[in-house]
Image (cartoon, rainbow, N blue to C red):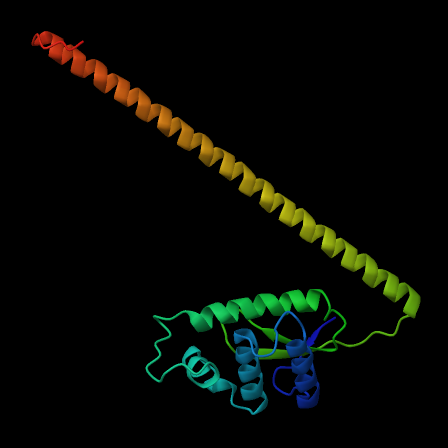
Length: 193
């Protein structure tokens, strides 16, 4: 069970979780995603989450010029979308046991902080359950990737067939055009052999 606590997060736990995220391969420190995440988390912890907007992220976190236009430049929107995906992947994989989680809600640049209670359970079955869960998610990922590759392959074959059909149609049109041209020339007595 997950309990949201966006209004009064434990700043130390959130800072620790931010450090773990920046040390992961999902949001490597120094990357665009890391800059955005660090900025929005720090602004929220400072109690200034109302100022978190595409413009302020671009100018203050990413170093864009003051004339930055968020309506024309989608850098921040794309970064936020990728950040949401990276966080989801992290918490469904290596961060699955994190007691504090940082999430980005779609449609907003403000993070929320969740506290996940740690349930007391015997080490053996819990570890076995976690291993089984990881295997299932790995299998699901492989199935999804396999399906995507199969669809891509089918679309490639279909496109190749369409191109071959278009080439055949073009050759047929050229042959018909040549027949018409020969008929016109014959009707005017200009047959060329």
